[in-house]
Length: 132
Image (cartoon, rainbow, N blue to C red; front, side, top):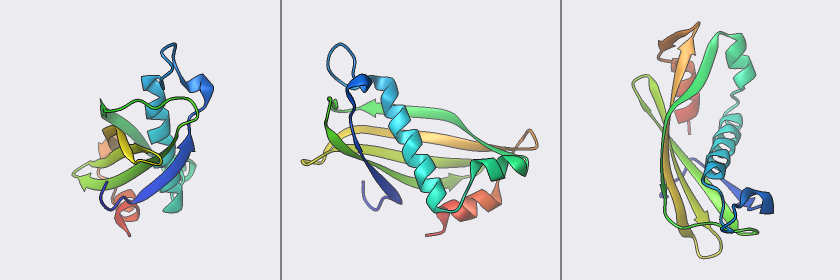
């Protein structure tokens, strides 16, 4: 990914693999979610604080393209870049295996905010996410 906003390194654990010896597809969403949450924390954003203000950030859609599998003990980096499109915060993800930086996953996660239960543009969150 060119110019990621944030990246996080991981190592595949045995229990994340299926009978074929590759990472189960659902675990990639866990990796990406953890990367998003860590990125958001670096911006000083707390989901608990947002919720206390009546703001709930929720993933509305995820698209994932699996390119190359990860296996037990593989080391990899999860990268994320964010953009804003109307009511959506769009998180672009790429996961690369070390050391060859082979692309394993490319994904897009669309987040929306419910403010007091209503779908709304969340200017405060948008400013924090895009402040570099």
